[in-house]
Every structure is written in C-alpha cells, then in structure tokens.
Length: 63
Length: 394
Ligand code: SF4
Ligand code: SF4
Image (cartoon, rainbow over all chains, first blue to last red; front, side, top):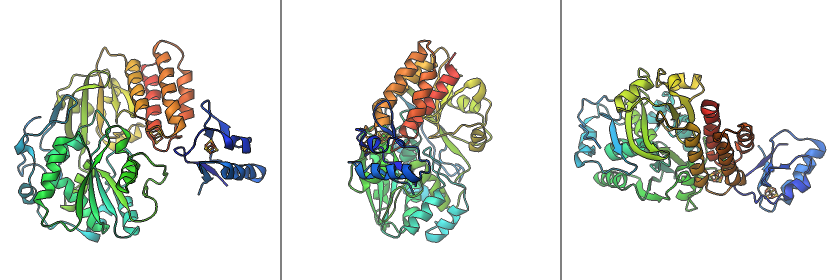
C-alpha cells in the first residue's frame, strides 16, 4: 500500500506520527511528511493505524 | 489603452489586432469601439460553427493545451467531461490572480464573443447545463463587455449563462477554487491530484481561462487555435508595483527581444517568466530565445500564464524575490500547514540569502515545502525562490 494525505484537511497535531513512528515523520511545523513509498508488513500496519487514528480523515490509501 | 481596429484584416487565427497597453494596475475600461460586437464577430465566420462531436474531433486533432500554466491538453478535459455525462458546467475563468497578467482581461474586453463561442462550443459538446463566467468584482470593464455579449445573444442561447463573482486574490482563480464555488462551496482550492478530472464525481465542472476559451472559439470557427501565444510584458516601478502591462500576440518566429521591442520596453536585467511562481532567467540568456513553447520546454522553461515580468537594470533580484515571496505567503488560502508556515520561512531564508548569508537553508525549506499543498501555490513559490538563488545568488 501507499499512504497519501490531503494537506488541506490536516490539523498538524501529529496523532498519525504516534501511531506510525517508522512511517511518518513530522516537519518543523508539526505536519506529517508522507512519502508515498510502497509500504509492506509492519510499516503497512502502522500506516493503517495512522489512517484510523487521524481525527480529520486526512490520511488515505493512495490509488 | 490603445484603440483597436477590429476589421477583417486581422488574421483568422489571431486573437488581437494589435498590442494592448494597460497603464497602472487597474482594469482599464476599453473605448467603446474596441469591443467586438456580435455582428463583427459573425462577419469573420467563413464556415458553419463546429458543434458537438465535430468540435470534439477537431479538438482531438489539435495541440491545444490550457493557457493558465498547467498546460493540460484541452482534448483530454473535453473527453473526460463528455464521459461524465450531461448536465455539467463550463466555466470561463476570468479571475486572473497574477498581478502581472492582463491577457485574459484583454480578451474579455475586446473579443467577448470569441471567448463565448469557445465556451458555448464546449457546452454543446459535453451537453452542459450552464456556462458560468467567473470574474472578480473589481473587473468592471470585463464584466460589462461579457454581460453585453451575453445580452446580444440571449435569444439564441440554449444553455443558461450566468456570472459569478470571484473573491479577490491569487488562489481564487485556481481551478479547484472555481469548481468548489460553482457547486456552492467556498472559493478555496480543493485537494485533488487529478488534473484531467479535477471535479471528481458527477457531471463535469470544466474550467478554462479566457485565452483557452478564445482559442476553443477559433477552433469552432475553423481557424488554427495554436498559431500564436499571448504574453503580457509587465513593467514595474518597484517590486509588485506594475505601471505598464502590454498584452501582445506572439509566434515562434519572434524572439523575446522582439517581444520587448514591440512592447517598447527597455532591456531588463532578468525576466521572471510565467508569473509570480515562474522562473527567473537572465536577459542575456532569454533575449535571443524564441517565444516557442517547445523550445522553452527544452530549456527547462515555460511561458506559464504568459507573463514576461521585467526586472529593470539596477534593481536587486534577490530583494525583488523576497518581496514576491512575502506577497505569495500572504496569498496562501491558509488551509495547508506546509504552505501557511513554509512560505514565510522560505521568505525569511531568502531574506538572509539577500543579506549575503549562505543560501543552503532556502533550498532545504524549498525541498520540504514543494508538493505538499492541496494546490500548486507553494510549488510555484519554491520554483521562483530557487531560480532567484541560481540567477542572483553570488
Ligand atoms: S493525524 Fe491526521 S490531522 Fe493529525 S497530523 Fe496526522 S494527518 Fe494531520
Ligand atoms: S497549498 Fe496553500 S494556497 Fe493551496 S490550498 Fe493549501 S494553503 Fe491554500
């Protein structure tokens, strides 16, 4: 899977980075850096958790 | 604004009879005789207007791309809009957010029927429900000429044509802002990565700027829609203080030096090509190049929204770019963190570069911000800043 973000929906509070520390880093202003790389195994699990945890529905699986 | 003699000696595939000069940053009211009325427009026609699938086929065979900067082939958008089914909306986007541009205004004011012709041909081809004319409230002259053109045609229209007022500012003219507003939402950029079908689900909301519609109009009238390009030569007295904008029609036989000579503008130090989010090019490099989209592309450049923004000799390019970045940061629609925080940080980093410090920080912030907004606003700002460092950095 590949992770994607709608930057206009994101609140920058960083809940996702807690759920997916190996996948999502935060920029200096607290907004997540989402790479778009293909994720597998534990990283994909983390990404799925981040998607579910995001209070703004800003994260999704890229098509 | 100079007078314009719209007689039939104007080439069939041309948009303007002669350069139009706009003094100051205001939207000048054209002299009454400058507006091409319906009778004159009709007199140009040499064959029946192409409609429906004949128009779509002609468009597929042309190389027409959008003239707002993104350069998506117009045929792709038309096909996607046809596939989306009937009942859609065609938008004439006349809300140019680029302060240096005047080309769309020039067309809306002098060739309203040609612009309308393009929109009506598209509306017919996609079986649209309505045509929306999207203009700034402050664009009084464009609103007046378009309203008059619609009035002249009101007995023959088979779609609704309405005018919607855009908020002032840079991103109100962004296609996704327009789509949102047409659907009754806020006029703010929306997140979409689909350049061909940015309206998402349901009937199409097909947005083209005025120049693209005028070119679609040429196609509908059987003329070559891509024989020329419109550019605006923008001269300023201080950063962002435009004192003279000259709209002229160019073709690939002209160099940028020819363009400047036609506009009567002095040789600059450098040009910001394309718009505020464009690319700085030293005049020594650009002057001899042709106004040819292909040649420019090969050199890593783009006409963008057609703006040739002059940096006069003696003015500091880095200072100029800092002023532009500050302005672009202010124009952010304030929806996305990387744009809200990244553009001011980028402006500060470039300010430090302008004071003689190392430029590494601006590049680092640029890399961090680029591609991370819902719209391409930050990407243009980063592109401009990086080219400023390259051209003006020590
Ligand atoms: S959890 Fe959602 S809203 Fe919060 S920072 Fe992450 S993506 Fe943005
Ligand atoms: S990138 Fe900037 S201008 Fe574009 S939607 Fe986001 S905040 Fe608004």
